[in-house]
Length: 81
Image 1 (cartoon, rainbow, N blue to C red):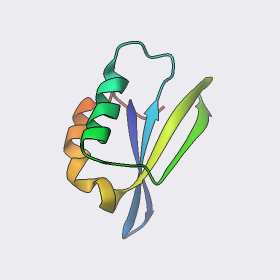
Image 2 (image 1 turned 90 degrees about the vertical axis):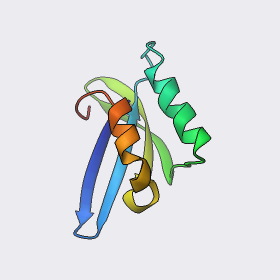
Image 3 (image 1 turned 120 degrees about the horizontal axis):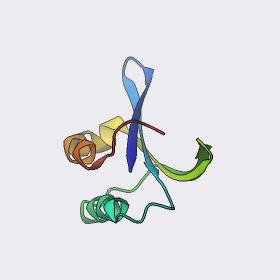
Image 4 (image 1 turned 180 degrees about the vertical axis):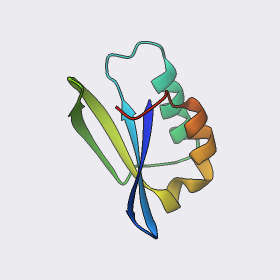
């Protein structure tokens, strides 16, 4: 999973989690399990093509997920796609 934070305005950030459907490491499953165990449901889920890969994207508002950012950042691979 790759994590990206987008600043929309001074008081609003979006958190995007990118899941590579071809990742077989099991790391994405750990993130999805973490989200489920903490009852974290995305505001939106969609597919986005980046670098010739169709990522499954989960979109969260920063206020909603901010208490979990440290854990998610630790589970993320480096850099947004």
